[in-house]
Amino acid sequence: MRIDGHALSTLEQPTLRAVRRTTVVALRGGGHEGRGEDVTYEPEEHEALASWDGLPDLRGTWTIASLSDRLGAARLFPAPPAHAASARYRRWAFESAALDLALRQAGRTWAAVVGRDPRPMTFVSSRGLGDPPDPAAIADLRRRSPGVGLKLDLGAAWDADAIAAVRATGACSTVDLKGLYVGTVVDTPADPDTYRRVVEGLPDALIEDARITDATREILRRHADRLTWDATLLEVADLDALEWPPRVINLKPSRIGSLRELSALYDACRERGIGVYSGGQTELGVGRGQAQLLAATFHPDGPNDLAPTAFNAPDLPQDLPSSPLDVQAGAGFRLRADD
Image 1: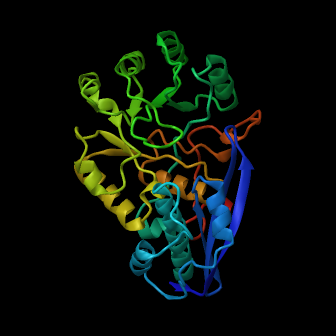
Image 2: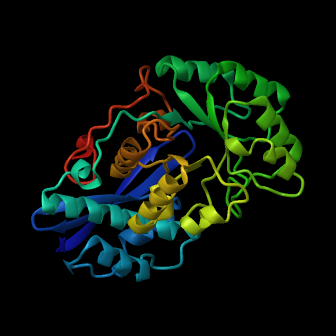
Image 3: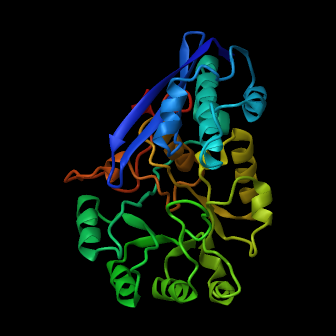
C-alpha cells in the first residue's frame, strides 16, 4: 500500500455510563482513505493525541507486515498511557486503517482475500441493567429487540434471589466475572461464595474471566467447559498459559492490537477446536463495524458482544435491531454502512 499522509478526528457520544470519546485514524494514499478507530478509554489521551505532532512518519510504500512491524516499534502516545492496554488499542486503529486502505488500493474485496463471506451475526447486549440486573429492564430491552441475549457484568448485589430472577428471564448468555482486571474501575473480587452462586444459579451461561485461586479452583473446575477468557488473551502463548484448555474464548481485535497476533490466535483456535466469539469496546464509528465484520466472517453464531451502537444510548429507541444482524461488507475493511 502507499501512504501519503494521515488525519485524525474525534468522535464523542453520551452513553448510559459516561460520555465516550474515540479517535478515528485515517490513512490516505493514491486517492483512497483507510480508517480505523482508537478506543482508548481516557478522554485526556485523545485530547493529547489531537494536539501532538510526534506520531511516526508513515509516508511511503508498505506491506501490511512491514507496517505492522513499524507500528510495533513506534511511539504512539506523547506520554506513557495510563493503562498498558491503550497502546494496543491505538496500534489496532492504525493497523485496521492500513488494512482498509490496502484493500481499497488493491481493488480487492474482504471476502475474496479471506476466502469466506460474512454471515448474519448473532449478537448480545451488555447494556447496564442495574446491580442486580432488573428483570423489568431486561424485559423492556427484549421487547425493543425481541429475544436478544445478554452479557452481564457481575455486581456487588448479586445474591441468590437476584440470580434466580435473571435465570427466569432466559436472557443471560454470558456472565463476565471481571476477575482478571487489576488497577481498573471494574476490578471485581474473586469471592468463592459469589462464584458458586453464579455458576450454579446460571447453568446455561458462559462464565467469563474468572479468577482461579485456591478458594475458587474446585468451584470452577466442575464447570470448566463453560469457562471462557477475554482480558488476558493477547497472543497465542496466553492460550497455553490457561489452567484448563478452553472450549470457547472471547477475542477482541482492539485488545490484541495487531493483525499478525489476531490472525495467529484465529489459526490456533481453528487448529485446537476452540470456539470464538468477540466483544466491543464501546466504539462509536468504523471500529464497531470492523469488529462486526470479523465476527460475521469467522464466528457469526457466537454470543458476540457487538450489538449496534444504539444499544448504548442513554435513551433507548422504541425499536432496536434484532439478532442476528445482517452484516454487509463495503469496500476495503469496512461495513457498507460506514463507506
